[in-house]
Length: 183
Image (tube, rainbow, N blue to C red; front, side, top):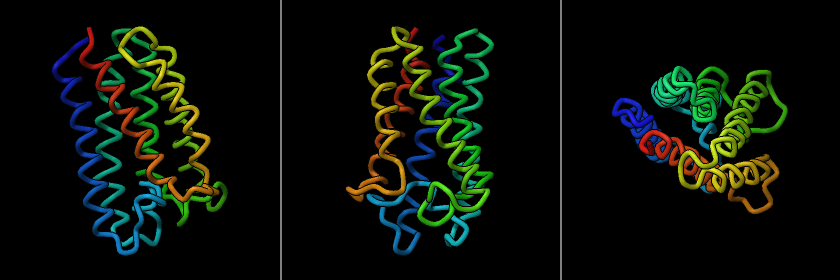
């Protein structure tokens, strides 16, 4: 279902996220992009937590929700699920801040944050596998996302959890874009 508005919103979501992350990781003292997750830009003690949550995560979530609804109305279930998974992750990040270090446990807000993040990555990977054949690379990106999800835990021995997360985000948003432009 190629549609100019769907394409525009998927591109805008990805660009907004990229620009916001680049800006706020520079504005956050001591933030290490290779080690820390995007969510750690908005932890309870982060200097720009409310701006990141309301001006970065919330718009990205809403921009992903719109094409998800349109794909749902067109009965393109797998791509609607991908958009909904992305929207859930970012709306969850806006509503529920991660604790510093993004632990698996922690506060109730952190646990809900982790749940919506797991829905985003697992749901995104599964929906892409279900969308195999609808756009190039769906199966590969879905499998890589599910495998990569295992490396997002807080006990990353490599110290590159932040880069892994950003790579998975690029894959998911690229796949979402492909589904917007491929007939």
